Length: 383
Ligand SMILES: *Cc1c(COP(=O)(O)O)cnc(C)c1O
Image 1 (spheres, rainbow, N blue to C red):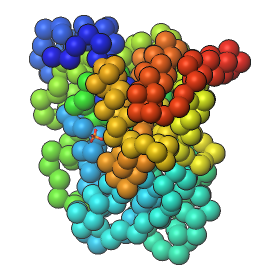
Image 2 (cartoon, rainbow, N blue to C red):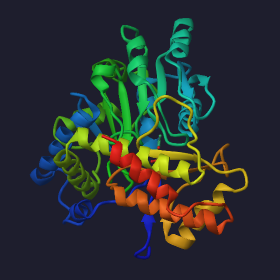
Image 3 (cartoon, helix red, strand yellow):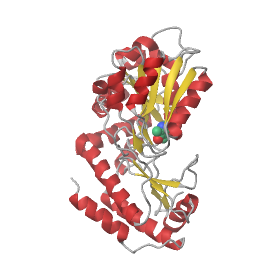
């Protein structure tokens, strides 16, 4: 049992608001009955504006990775070519999934911390026939956001599909699926959607649906989007739905719309920027070197004299604040703090105080209050 000072400040899973926990605790209903159908329909209605789409939304009992795999299984055939942008851990995971399935995988290898250049994507799609271009919207390992509008524009009018992982973007970073021409968006419940892990979702364009509907794709059963699409027409899923999680998601989505989607996105932007500024003032430089920075995760360079693992451990043991390191080639060099979901200014001020004390305990020089002060200044002048 986590103690009362436990603060879940990871880039996913994120803390679940009381209202959502109450909704999840309600009695379980039949996943084929009228009570659940009403919840299911409402979820779709509330998700569509967040994704900027009029597509049907498919739900699965799954983590985010399952939705990445499901997206590829439904559109690829053995030996077909995909181009995967690898600018962080989740891009590499997408490439690994495509290879495991037996697709022919080309990668765009970009230094971690930088964004994919749409001009490079264009060069590659001119040079070869790709079934799909695969991009991570918000790369949680580096804190970089991809320019999906530009990439979508250059694929328009081509047969190539644009497949996007917006697991850590959706609900915290702007997404306009239809306007930007994104064919498949995959996401899951435990990031900016403020729910426990376990629910995956996907939204698919008519262009993608044409490919998904073909019989010559990879073998699929549980992940078959054709089955899911048939069930959505009857307000349900092909197999038993995690009804409690869907009830929780509905409540979380109601909260987002009560606050207002533009306000929610603006709050993510302001608080992530303020946390970054506060961390800089403590001597922790922002890691990404890109134009579009994430609003949902702050990635920080670990000072030369320190190790990321020691900061993460200190934050937890001294303060009960759970932040993330890196379990990849940035191990010990980068730490990450989630700035998504039900986050308020008080949360990031507490993060900064805990960071300051932890850095001090590790012998790193800090000026008391410098982080909080810099973040407060930023918030006062931000709009
Ligand atoms: C969290 C995350 C995932 C999904 O991870 P799961 O552990 O499978 O839920 C995928 N992509 C990105 C960018 C993520 O941040």
